[in-house]
Image (cartoon, rainbow, N blue to C red; front, side, top):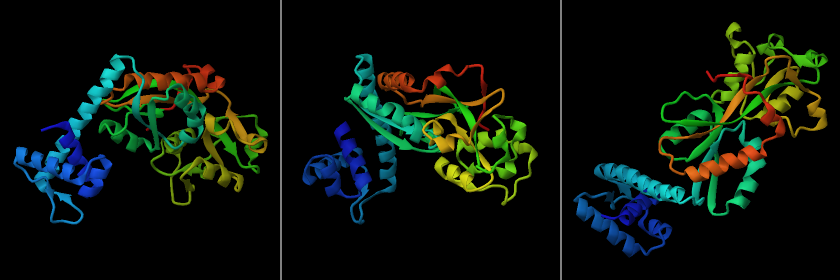
Length: 312
């Protein structure tokens, strides 16, 4: 039994076709088929039901494939560990970022990182917090940038920066008369919020003293992105809560609709999070360093004593 054979059966499982799997593995189909057959003979288990189209694993084959994934993950982990021990910054790194951060934080550092570390193959995906936690625990991604605390066992959080919240008001909103806004000024009935699953929604509800308001289906509109919220606020008489980075590249006209909190400015703690299977320490450190160098100066000055909103 070899790692190559395990790699071949995993390819067949992904492609559900021997010819396509062979192409993915850069070998001929007879070579791949012969190696899969050798593994089946060695284990005395039929891994794939070849009578089906597309090819599918047998019940016992499913268990073999599940174990093969673990073995291959550990093998790749050992390879990455050896790179880290040698101080080599190279290899694949899969990074996930929450949607309320990705459009704003990624342009700040990605290009510099790619230029500075050309031997790293950086793959980036957007996911909501719950999905990121699952992927980290399963070892399907290497790291993530998201708002914390998560309070999840097995995950390691390294602080990057505190991001203050701001209020974005409709051009017709009466609160525009104020230079600074207090939490008690905010009425949830006039709020435009992200849909369920976004951590920013929970934080906005805390700011609006949600626990004192009875929710009904007419209470607020639920959007899927911050850009939608911004456009809906401008076309209404309401408001929304935005993280700092979502406001820095706004037009001059939109900037006039942004207000700061009067005191005890609420912030969210943005961290670089890794899972229990993390072994790519050299790449992690390089990413954290480049991110730190490229965040706006205002965020570097944000006090660590600021009020950090816990995600509930």
